[in-house]
Image (cartoon, rainbow, N blue to C red; front, side):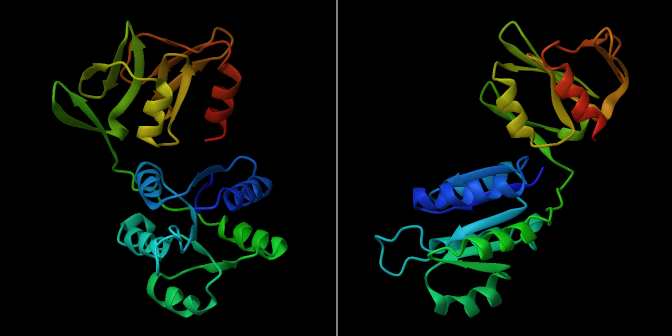
Length: 241
């Protein structure tokens, strides 16, 4: 799924751009924030495919160009070296500077020309940022920081208010957190919930017994149950990989 991050201080503009992205691709994930700190947090956790960035995020500050600074910083992150950036601006004179310093893909001028804006966003959304596969899942346990390679996680299960992470090497038991939160932190299309308390790495699936709702994973003896309410979505995700 295409992931689009919108950084725009005006709520009305964020709404217009968010709706436009969903009209172009209803399955796209849209993240819309009003400041660079929230944008950095999302860009680090997710792999963004298109950035829509307002150059001036703090109009109350004279000479503010915090949106441009944000883009200059993310260009220092390897995976975002060539990710399309579309600037939102009413400052026509900034164009040439932005094109040369941060390899800007294009500009949206205020007030928006809806057709021109839609065409620009739609073309940029054809690009997909290459994920760095050697990701680590970072966790905190008894005051210590630990990591495990995401590719080594076979499945994750919530049991009795604890989170059990089963890897190719060990079982890690952590304080409870929601499966939704864990999926956000892992940020990998290989993982999907098969029941309310279980997330599996689909790369390890050896066999699925669809009628009886069980799946079998490499290196795991017991079968994993697929929840009846999640079966349809899970099978669609698995078959479309």
